[in-house]
Image 1 (cartoon, rainbow, N blue to C red):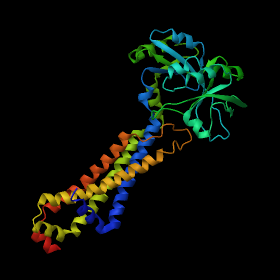
Image 2 (cartoon, rainbow, N blue to C red; image 1 turned 60 degrees about the horizontal axis):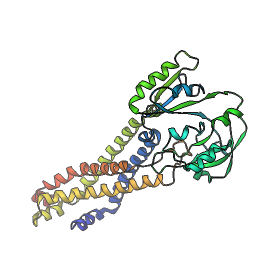
Image 3 (tube, rainbow, N blue to C red; image 1 turned 90 degrees about the vertical axis):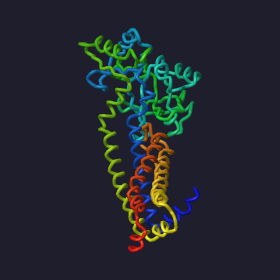
Image 4 (tube, rainbow, N blue to C red; image 1 turned 45 degrees about the horizontal axis):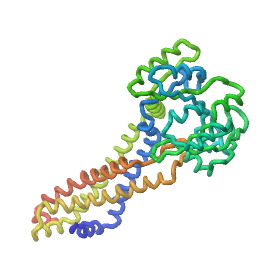
Length: 379
């Protein structure tokens, strides 16, 4: 700590150059944080989704329906705990750009299959007894200013007309990465009003007694409905989510490639900056050695300057990335999980420190090996 004034005095000699170098670190680490946010938004929280739930869809495509009669048949399979039916509703509130996922759900099993999406008992009971009732995620409710007791009109492009719903409850979860954007209505209400697809649903979510039973139950479900008019494709919810992410491209490769190019460029910029700093201060470094400072001290002081620049820039970049997430999801519900986890923040700062070390080690080593006579001759 006692050498901090000396380190900052050296860095303040060329204020503009130091500021621009710190800015380079901040921009690079900000980009790293932003890419981490996007990666998390695409992949979601697979830890929350887990492997103890299956998604059963039509083998042709998820947009093709399944019979509602499959629910009872799946429920009878040993190892199946609960089966929830869901159907995409696709409601629009006021303007088409106000996107949020809306589903018709089976109220008897939805809460059992998704216990992490917490609704109070009173609100759920109200929803069960309200044919036109709805449960909405806390993030969507906050976005539109909805509260329990409001009556909300939604346009239904798929089923036609304007449908009105009573907000009977708001589900929530304090953990980051949980989808708090969904809108649930009664499956039976949808089936009564629509003019096509009666007796059919979009997909099933199956809660298992044990995740170890997943391979057996997947095989049993798909074999049971093989060669029927509505064949099924079953996967764990984690696997299904991962496959959807892959359809959007190799996000991890993209992040790695962009991040690698940015940090390599930063390494060159910082290394050049530190090399210039050492060359400009040869006479000063020689005097320091002449009055008794050791080679190791010279190595330390030059390397410390590089690390200080990296640390300040890294912290600024991470703070800017974190600031982006404070306003919630800027995509209007397309990417519900818009967060920067602590692990990514620490990794970004560590990467900045690593780049600072690599950029400063060669100039610091050259300064350590500097001969006093040669340095005074050049100065």
